[in-house]
Length: 131
Image (cartoon, rainbow, N blue to C red):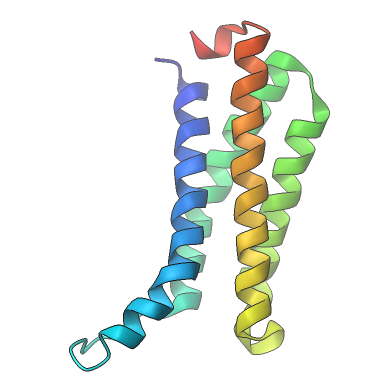
């Protein structure tokens, strides 16, 4: 299986993990507050996810662009990564909890969509990247 295909799939999965973290960790912490002795720092988790998301996403998107030459797929993915970076950089202290989560979810959705389109375009054009 090709590295570009794997990186698209991994990047989509990482975006999904980001979104799940934003949506469900606060609920989990509230429901288990009496039983959970540790606290998960949301900012730290987002920083760690970003360390993995950015290189994998850039590799997949740039590789896809080199194969299919469709710039909007690459640009939309980069825009999503910028939103994720801004959410981590500004954090809940500047943006507030709701806006930080909203920015993260928008960025994750855009990144996942870009990787999905990257995959679709390459399959449609029968690129060698997904053989």
